[in-house]
Length: 140
Image (cartoon, rainbow, N blue to C red):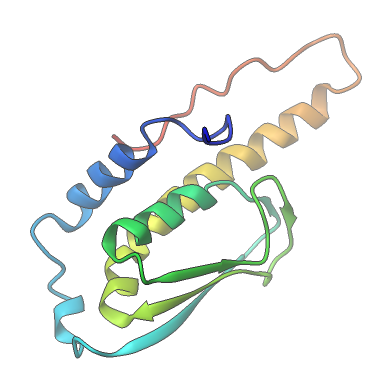
């Protein structure tokens, strides 16, 4: 089965490059925590937006530790409100902390792009214009 059309075929290598850039040979901060500590983290929105990037967040944690679970309360393309819970992440505390920055960078960049794009589409909806491309790319 092929991935949905909005997911690039090189998603895994894109996430791998971003993790490599972010944590390199290790995450010294995470290593300060007990290796067997387990936590639950919550991703909460701070402003209205269009969600985009769920597969990237999931892939970050899949690559770091497949036993980490990401339970989403929304899907890509959903409109969200401030203070809305988007995802609950459970697993080893070190892994959650190690993946946090990379996962949130993807989610914030892609959601921002989707939100701005939706705003432009709304602005031109009653015209003969069409929005063809946002020319945005993710790191790597």
